[in-house]
Amino acid sequence: MNDMTQTSGTLAPSRMAMVPFVSVDDMMRIVNRAGVAETIAAIADRIEADFLRWESFDKTPRIPAHSPDGVIELMPTSDGDRYGFKFVNCHPKNVRTGQQTVVAFGVLADVATGYPILVSEMTILTALRTAAMSVTAAKYLAPKDARVMAVIGSGAQCEFQSLAFHHLLGIEEVRLYDIDRTATEKAARNLAGTGLRIVPCATAEEAIAGAQIITTCTADKQMATILTDNMVGAGVHLNAIGGDCPGKTELHSDILLRSDIFVEYPPQTRVEGEIQQLDPDHPVTELWRVFSGQEPGRRSENQITLFDSVGFATEDFSALCHIHAAARETGFFTDLDMLADPDDPRDLFGMVQRAGGV
Image 1 (cartoon, one colour):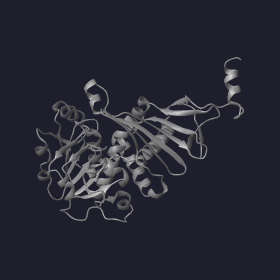
Image 2: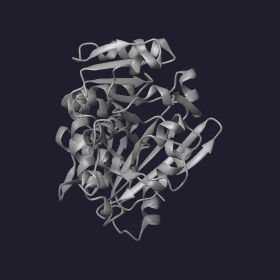
Image 3: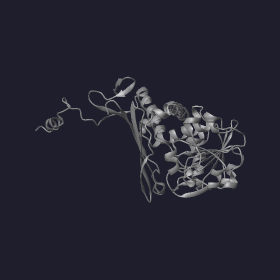
Image 4: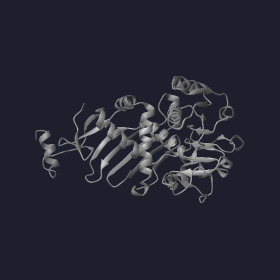
């Protein structure tokens, strides 16, 4: 176990100014020690707790740099005690060269000093927190007797979503469809032995037959129509997680007009989510109000609920806080020498001189 200085329940920089770093290998060790489903559940608990103190967070839409091939984004927030941000991209074409479509890293810092207290990979962590957010929203929005979920898109998110809904919401059957059959085969292999009944499907229509929850998680950066209006019947919950930037959607606009729509942060979702297709004043409900009991979630059996999920910085903050605690508990991290720490804080030049033997 690496040495860390603990102050007020956090991993604080030691006198040697080391910062804990959770690498990809460390993240996999942390997750596998606890279990994938258990990690998602723990992050979901933190997300819900943080949404219940929504008004204590600084909030801003993520800051994007768009290109024809994808987008790079910065997602910052603070609760006044800690500051966190995530750097993340989405480049769908990367899959054609064997690269991830999404890669990410994140930082937590102490607001009182400005010192970072954690640097972490977030490619794996983003998949975990996205599943955690989906299932937390579904707890309030999905039909209570839901046992069948369709997943349209069998890429990197598919298995995390399926396990989350199985372990935390009681889903027993997952019906899979992807335009790339090898992706569906991959997901079916990975989910074998999890207790889920896996049904690979030849079309999206076949996949959604009998499903009470429909999750769309495709990757193409385009205004796509993964689901048409006639495919969505009364009483279902739509978990739309693939449309997450301007010019990228998955659902026909007529579906939105028949749905009660729930969002994380409207100023961001109206630009990036499915609702970018609608009038800017189309009514939506903020999820924190549902979690806190200020607004209703699912009200009737015939209601169509739609979680227009784009991902928000507070969710990454919650995930980083979980990993911060897990790193402390397990010791799965590496110390990074990334903070200059001269004996006299005013003598940074002298520190450089002495190190060079000048």
